[in-house]
Image (cartoon, rainbow, N blue to C red; front, side, top):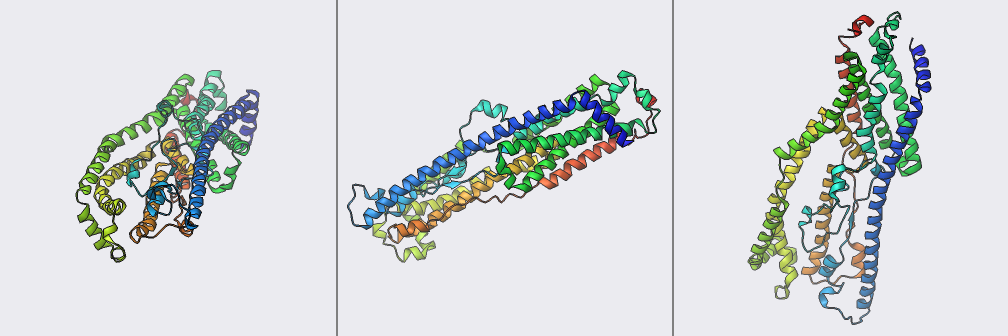
Length: 475
């Protein structure tokens, strides 16, 4: 019976041009999403290349200046600008901490349009932890980016609805539903088979068009085969969810116009209303403190420390005896006082920054807890994870930059207190930043979750309808 239904359904879809529509529609949708995502990644790479080029240019000038200093030449520069001074290196020639895009970054813009991908921590001014956002066009933020994630989460379900909303009701309206009752199969089983066939065709076309789009526009993705396979499976699971909803609506309502309105209503609830509601609840329950207030509090702390610099320096040398033994306090200047006071500022600002970070963490945990209310939220989180553009990725990047800034200071500050000059040898020993993606993958777990949600909905929807005959369906 299944073989007969498959052959009949395939011929029906070919004659009605549905397969052609799906190939063209899904192909153009995925191609445009991949193109836009690739364009965003290209801009990000161009910005990074520009920063790297500027760094190399400055380093070449710095090394040339060091050569002149080591050769004994006199330079027309104030001493505090000479690259032989450790603090001049720490302030004027910082290293760049770059977050390079992942190979699948084109899949989802995620938070990449909100946060910067490179940072240059300096020895002066350590509160860059509050300054990772970029100026972005508010209109673009309002409407979002048309990337693959947008195409899959928002538009693909509409194609599924158009493809499935009247599978059963059309038979009723054409008057052929009663003829199906003569077949040795219940209407519900016939519908499930028919929908299953359409699901296989729809999913096959979607996966094929996705691979073709990536193959033409973003070949680098094939270097991350694990996430690429995960993308195909999560796509299949998400399509399955919408087909299951279509099956249940076809059985429960069995009227073409009402089916369409019901499915569109469910789409609005799952894709738009629930995610917006969860986000609003998170902002209401765990509002983040004002960044301006935090910056003002930090400035006040710094002003207070300036009045207690002698006491702070004494405490600093007591906690760093290795520096006290080799330091001459009579030669202490601005930088010595500043670096000592910065340690105090860091300790005092930890609770302020922790409050901000904790509120953001609570918001993220709330979204993670409520994501199972909507497969659209699960999909967005999963695609962001695949692309390496989720909130967790950027928080981890921020943490890595902070750790790098500490290593950067720990290398230069002892040279300051020990009155050592910076040389070309020190240049080769400078700490180097290398971003590591430490965020665990949740792709396969979320695939299972969406599949289980779909099966539960299908079971609940069919448990009372598995033996319905045509005359029951028509009621």
